[in-house]
Length: 414
Image 1 (cartoon, helix red, strand yellow):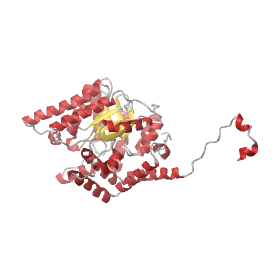
Image 2 (cartoon, helix red, strand yellow; image 1 turned 180 degrees about the vertical axis):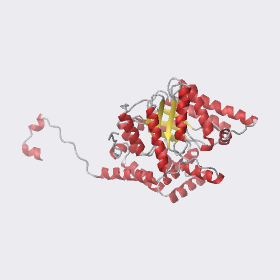
Image 3 (cartoon, one colour; image 1 turned 135 degrees about the vertical axis):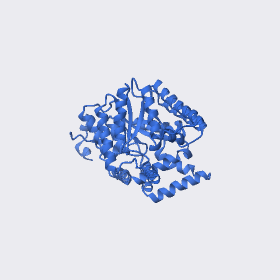
Image 4 (cartoon, helix red, strand yellow; image 1 turned 90 degrees about the vertical axis):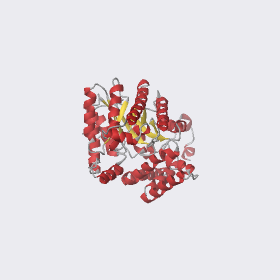
């Protein structure tokens, strides 16, 4: 094993795009989010205030929304796309409206996802598009399909309509050669999503990876699922597209398993999730000719591991089958350092109306408070950069010229 190592503590690179004021605002927001009590009070107050029509949208938009979202529309995200692009970081526009149940809303969401794909087309600053299946299909319907329950006549029509939305999204991505992620969701609806993703990959990943399924390695069965997905892709002659993440629904999954008295799908501990995630990186690298994958991670050990594996295999840092990805507003030390070193990097940039994006923001806030190591790391890095900027910075030596040499020695001393 080589001793190859990236300098992921370079705060000057990580926060180069942030002004002093932005850095201080970021620090205080993470500091407040580090308190579970304040987070619970704040999120409940935001939900209540918006539901009652209180004038708090501006406050939300200028604080947590601005930290983790690009704007309310694609147009509002443009400055973020350009800002990230200047540092060679791609933007993944994520329309963060989920959990609806109205067919009209599903059609609108489908149209919006198609707009993100069209916006991404031929723009290196927007390398991927993404969608959640619950954005275009009813949650309860996905639950019934995943459980192999019989659908009524009306539900069968509804399911075919939902599948046609997914087909239209993926076909558009295929025609434009624009890769798209299908996000992972709760385990009890994931089987239906996995089946859809496999169907889309088999249809559209023949020549190149266009459709990517998302694999949550905090589930104890997902490493095996990755390997079986790879076997299925090989057997049916298509590229496997995989976005590897740890996961986003851990507390919800455990609570439901306990309530309904079935074995939890979640790993027994963090070490097990880390082990499977890193094993998944090894597996994808070992099969890099047939797998295109995105390492969606905020874990520095996993980032170092993947970079080291690429170095050991003599894979170029910009290999087209390998991407790193982090959430907008977090882990800038990973994203900006990786980009500066020439790796393919992207940021998930959620957007949408403040009220509709609030469930995402609340989940983001609560996840952060449950992963205190990550919060402490964010605060520590921001503090380091604030301190670094306060120190006198070394001034460059004057350029030696003939004119300078002709100046009297005593004047040069001044």
